Amino acid sequence: MNLSQLLTILNVRRYIILIVAIITAVTATTVSMLLPKNYYATSSVLLNYKGVDPVTGISLPAQLLPGYMGTQAEIIQSKNVAIDVVNRLKLTEIPSIKQDFAKASEKNQSLDITFWLADKLANNLDVKPSRESSVINISYKGVEPTFVATMANAFAESYIAISLKLKIDPAIKASEYLSEQNNVLRDNLQKAQEKLSKYQQERGFTSIQDTFDVESSKLRDLSSQYSLMQSQANDSSSRRSSAVNNMSESPDVATNPVVQNLRISLVTAEAKLSELAEKFSKNHPSYIASEAEVIKLRSQLQTEIDRAVKSLSNNANIDSQRFADVKAQLEKQKQKVLALNRSRSELMIYEKEVQIAQNALESVNNRFSQTVLEGRSNQADIAILERATPPQSPSNPRVILVLPFSLIVGGILGCFFALLAEFIDRRVRSRDDILAIVDIPVYVYSIK
Image 1 (tube, rainbow, N blue to C red):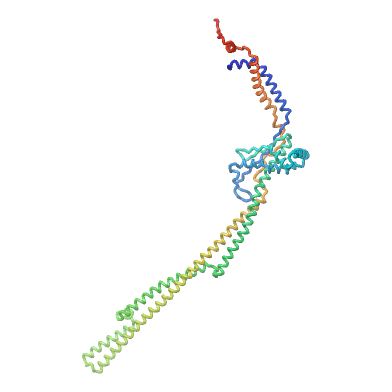
Image 2: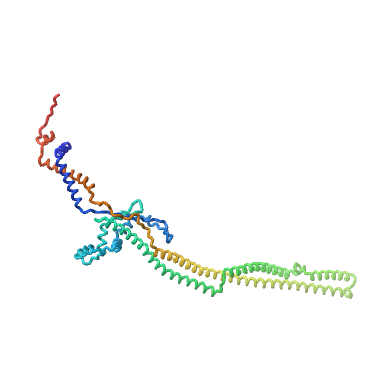
């Protein structure tokens, strides 16, 4: 059967198609009008993304996370929200619902009316999160317009309450934990402060930095004195060695005024003695007196030279002793400064422990204050954008939609019955039918 034959059959059997389509449309329309009417009411909620929480001042990027809208839809469809709706509207106190539950509990005695009713309500709930915005549509289906609007609004309000509870409960638990940690950190801070005070009392520190500065200044002064005394001691020792090894050529001995005067007097006396030796014999009284004077002057000169050398030795010894004293004081001061430096390092460790404990306590105190505010907050990040109102017309069945759809289905069924009738009562309707039945060639002559 080709397309031409099919169209010919459908054209001949068009009354069957028309009758079947009309019967189907009338039947579908009648059935849809007899079926109970269902109403849809929708309440829209907006998930406000504020960026910063007005109470704590902390950024809230949760609504930017993938799957956030899906999570909120799951919360709306959860049993906790349905139970809150039941308790909020006190549905368990309605007599008709009690009767229905009594019939259902005959088969299962372990049923709870709240959970049973929550499951039934959840079956008629429809949640559709928006893909391009932060709006979620909460729809409820039922046979009574006012009831479905009430239920849609109740689910929206319960969702907001449950979301707020989910936000507050962790904050309350966190505040309890932070309160315990606050006490622990306060004890740690007190112990650290006690260690610091005890260490300061044992060392007698009022201001270790000032003490360290004073002692460091003393050390610098002693270092300067040490360098000066070392130079003086070396100079004194060198001058003493020079005087001991070569008394007559020693600059210190030569510049001595007494030695200089005695040397001048000795030269004068020796010159006089030479003159007297040319004039008189050695036994002459003048020569003997002059010779005695020269010997005396030489003895005095040697005595003064020895005295000058001894003075240099004494000065060298004094400088060496002073150098040794300054060196000992310098070493003692170094040890004192080093001890102060170690004490300052230990003190800084104790002070650092106190600072760390104090910072930790302040951080926990700040977070504790925030969590307390969060736990007491009654502001949710969700608001009802549009409340549900009782629908004016049922959502289904819709005769306007049923009628064209039933006509299409009826037309298809009519075509099927038309073809079925044709196969039961097959007739010749074209040249192709003759060829298919008798298998005889058909010649067509055209007369011009």
